[in-house]
Length: 147
Image (tube, rainbow, N blue to C red; front, side, top):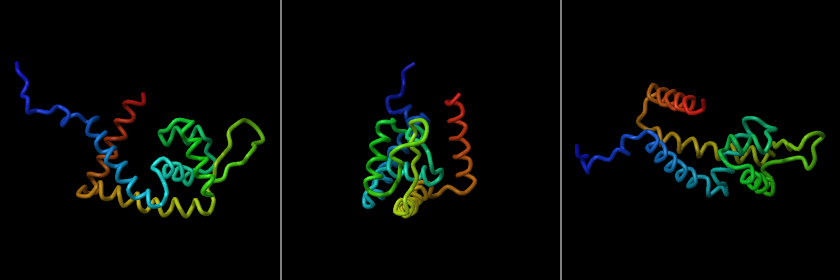
C-alpha cells in the first residue's frame, strides 16, 4: 500500500507537537526576558530559588533542565548582578545553598509577570476545563516516561 505523499505523520505526533510548542514558548520567553537582561535559564533559576530558597547547584540544574556546569555559570552571572547570594564556604559538605537578594526578588517578580503573560497568550482560547485537561494529560505523559 502506498503512503499518501501529502500526509504528514509528524502533524499527528504528540512529541513533535510538544517540541514545536516548547520552541515557540522559549522564543516568546526570550523576547520578554531579554529587555530585563535575563535568559530563560536565568529566569528559571530565579523562579526556582523564589519558590524554594537554599537549593543546591545540582538541584537547580536538574529542575531548570541544564547541566551542573551550565547552572554554575548561570549562578555566577546572577551573583555578579547582585540577584542571588551564595555563601563562599559551608559548614559541612560541598553544597552552597543559594537565596535571592532583594534585587533578585524584585527581578523575579517582574519577570514572572512577563512570563505569565506569555503563558496566557499561549493558552488563549482554552477554557479552564481544557487547561486542566492539558495539564493532567502532560502530567500523565511525564509519569509514563519517568517510570
